[in-house]
Image (cartoon, rainbow, N blue to C red; front, top):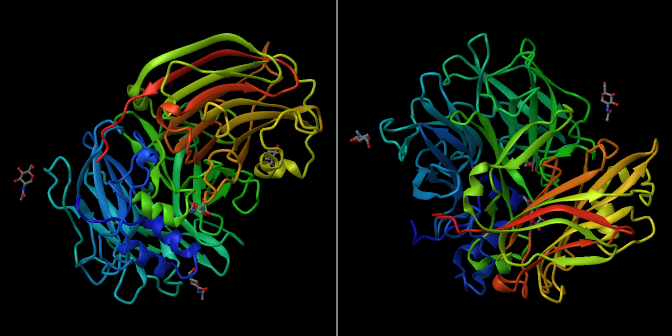
Length: 572
Ligand SMILES: *[C@@H]1O[C@H](CO)[C@@H](O)[C@H](O)[C@H]1NC(C)=O
Ligand SMILES: *[C@@H]1O[C@H](CO)[C@@H](O)[C@H](O)[C@H]1NC(C)=O
Ligand SMILES: *[C@@H]1O[C@H](CO)[C@@H](O)[C@H](O)[C@H]1NC(C)=O
Ligand SMILES: *[C@@H]1O[C@H](CO)[C@@H](O)[C@H](O)[C@H]1NC(C)=O
């Protein structure tokens, strides 16, 4: 396996193909080109990557975390997607195994695409996945571990007497994929969702089964939304109304809300709503945001797609895992020899407001923290930039809390801009004190060269809106992230829902995980997340610097900044 050459991913591969005309041609070319390994300094050291290219459904079973991901063995035509398999006991260090599911039968001979695992009450794990059958149709199949006594569940079987378990009768067979983890209703019926579209209406089709083998389509989808296009990788799960503990996918009741996430193929982002699941109608009703208005919530306002959650029964938490593609050109990806990484797994729960989720890197990642430096109670005058010295900042974890003294200069953000955070970030960039730029920007320069010719800025700007309420904008600006030209330098942005009027001194916090070509940032304890892929030319390795800056028109204080060196994890 180590010697074979890999391509992109499953759900991801699919998306990639949809995004480019003549994609199969590109993929064939990718298959036959040798990587030149020009610059492996952009390769990540604690984010999950396969040896080469790229990534599917996570699962926890009997003390072992399983990550199944998608790849295409060397020489194979593109449809030949398999489920590669790595295992871990801590979600940080990973051991590769042989592929778990690969094309062998008429129901998946042209590819084994995305799917999900469900643990049955008798403690048997089952995988449902999309197979591409002999006719090129997307059908849903079932796979079971061959030997439940094998602690690593290395081998999986796909019983021919059952498969395919769901076929696209009367549906578009090219838009019918990515089954979710199933949940069990009080009526003893299992339910599973499959992504679909009818015309431009995106939907999550619902199927029910008593025995997990014989599935019947419900009359109506669990949910649908017009003009959203294909819903890929749907994910549907309960969250506690109060508290941070995660719940098994089948839990329901007055103490929970439900979350529906869809990966919109047309927009290439993961959107979610918080709402109520009505089991007697098998309908999901979003609270008030909806996937088809441009202001919907996203897990991440940067690069983050085809994510999945799973319930970790050992630590009673729900963990979210997403995939980040490259910002590089396809040629550069080929030269690097790999493409795509997994974001750091995030624990996720419902915010106290009940309006949104909160995400935070799994606690295990802190086991990689090494040398630490602190900055305490440091005033940053207007226009100042302070270097954080003493840690290797190409591979680091940084947490900072800014204390704000006066927000008088936070000007009004017009109502139009209130629906377009990314556009505001892009228009204002991170230069200082522009008219109409709000109070800010202030934040971090990461992966910066000594002369700051290269730098990625992660920062806040504070505005006001009608009614004198504050509006906090979080941005990631990449206009100077790399001297390279053939890199996507789109700015990312999202609003942070925080009440700055509360408490004696308003504060805003930021945590950023830096890993060579990955920057993952968590604003205000994980209320707003932004992930980026960047490829500095100068700010590499020992030449990468980290700064805190304040370009706001008045001083602010770093009440505390801690930065840690991160060790290299053992990954594949
Ligand atoms: C099942 O796995 C166990 C543990 O690895 C092993 O001892 C046993 O021989 C396996 N059984 C078969 C039929 O492969
Ligand atoms: C079926 O889905 C495919 C893939 O998105 C699309 O190209 C095609 O137009 C769809 N067919 C119909 C009849 O909607
Ligand atoms: C959502 O609903 C609540 C209560 O029904 C209402 O107060 C709030 O304004 C709504 N929010 C939006 C964005 O429509
Ligand atoms: C991957 O990245 C490119 C460029 O940065 C972007 O245009 C594309 O939509 C991305 N694809 C996905 C699935 O995120």
